[in-house]
Image (cartoon, rainbow, N blue to C red):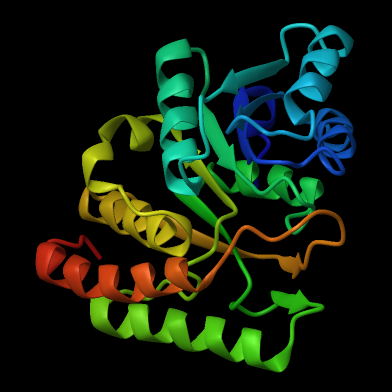
Length: 247
């Protein structure tokens, strides 16, 4: 699987805010993969020099590293929207990968997700299918995540087991059809919104098992408000999409 996609061109979108401890290692790891990747870093005006490190890498990897600087910290969802729009407007990309900057997502798995686009429109790096899992989470955090996904899956009537996962690969034509005004949440809520909207538009979804590792450098950007937003957003999504999902 994935031989055809290995010769096509994909863009990896990485949102950052104060990821100076991770970004250089991540860029080197991504560009070392045996796949035709470019990388777009969407930086929310980091104060630790993240953007300056990215600019240095633009010289190291000409035409393969791109930087989109935003004037303020406006949330993960908004950063991804900006990155996805950039990919569509730039042209020339067949697929787009979204991933974290903190090595919670293994750069090697980005290759597997892109290869999965040969048989699906959206590929999710899933913690909750056979072969997937998490490392270095507390039992409470893992239980909360599993419960949140089960809650969303039940209310929305879909079979995707990791709706809140943020490691995905998209065919560019799927992103072109998304209504970004309806993808206004941040964090977990944004992940649910985009996957569900793609399914409403008829996109096929494939879950590929990954091992999610908690960050070892830098600080987590997640907080209780993002979780609450996601729980409330699922109820709104249920009302908006009932009977519209193509299964």
